[in-house]
Length: 280
Ligand SMILES: O=C(O)c1cc(=O)[nH]c(=O)n1[C@@H]1O[C@H](COP(=O)(O)O)[C@@H](O)[C@H]1O
Image (cartoon, rainbow, N blue to C red; front, side, top):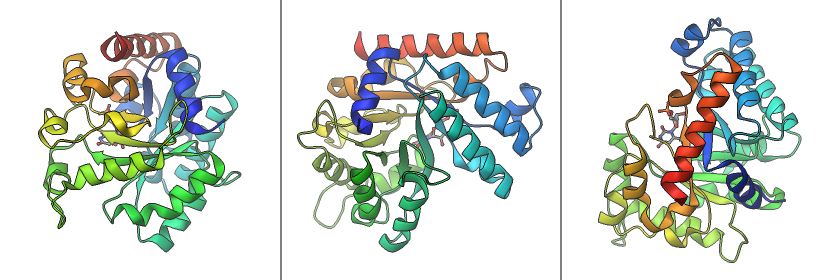
């Protein structure tokens, strides 16, 4: 089954929540784990186990693993492998973006079946131009993998680039949304090319005239919990596109660890809250 179909199924079964695997040094300490590759692997495996059967996906953030060099990357490989074994969908958060020929290297690293860092979907940055993502789009299409293209990010600095108007008069983020939507035309129940739109962006979607409803793909929404957004912001930002939204929470649920039962309870509560806010 292709990524879009797998994710739609998982969102229906477990609710529209993705659990971020962000092993911040402070969280590792709070969990009684060392900030070492072994600590990261244990942290990630605990989150995968708690999310299995309770959340639609997990999203390991590569940055926290890369801090430890090759052994940290090996811990990330281990976490991705555990998720595959537990049949939990993985969205690898690496926000990759480069000129086309280098993008091919990133695509091979994350989207090619059998690659050590193979994931189900990858976050990518289109801010070298949407067309620069072509190698990743092609490889994802070939193997039924997913991509999440940054559109309106949750950080306040993003607006200076994403709200800008391009030479043809179109808002930059709107052009990214239009290009992503073009990849999903006709896909059932939804396509494999998603977007990232932060739940913290306020009225930007409507102010900029960005039509998310026609995306026919998933919208990953970080910003809930630790960055301050909640149910009210989800309905304000997403309006009629709410049924496409996959809420991400990292610190908001990870702070409930390290014990599996309490962590699973927090994940289920967050999944229920996301379901209620987005699907009524
Ligand atoms: O691509 C992302 O996941 C992402 C995009 C964005 O616009 N904002 C954003 O916060 N994220 C990621 O989502 C996670 C948010 O973590 P919490 O704020 O702890 O829930 C981090 O891994 C961020 O890197």
